[in-house]
Length: 204
Image (cartoon, rainbow, N blue to C red; front, side, top):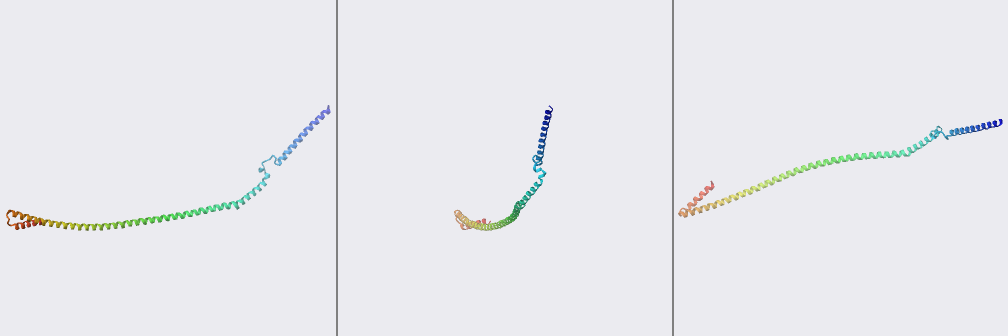
């Protein structure tokens, strides 16, 4: 019986020893995995990788700087310079056009002023010419009217003289006829008296 318990104790002790050995091996494997990054920090944040990361960062930055300084930046600078020159040319052209427009406006104003002055001069000259023509026409018309009036007055005077002569003759003939009817004597004296009376009446 004693031997049996002794062998049982040895078996239990042997089982515990194997379990402890396996646990130690597992812990050693976990530590080894942790040391090699199997279950540690994210590689970019791992201090052991900083040197290589800085190297590649410097290399990439240098390459980008070389590309930008040799290719991209000159092209961008050329485009900017071209745009600057184009804007400067546009501004110069705008200034020239402004000066040309101002000169054209001044020329137009001078031409307009000259045209107004010429129009005023032409209007004054035309008015003077018309006034002179009207004065000449009026003087000519007055002269013709005076001539016609004088002619009419002459015709009236001649008609009056002829009428008076006829009246004198008619009155003398009438007086002679009356004297003959009344007595028959002194016919010549009666006609002369009638003619003298008519002349005196017309003279008054």
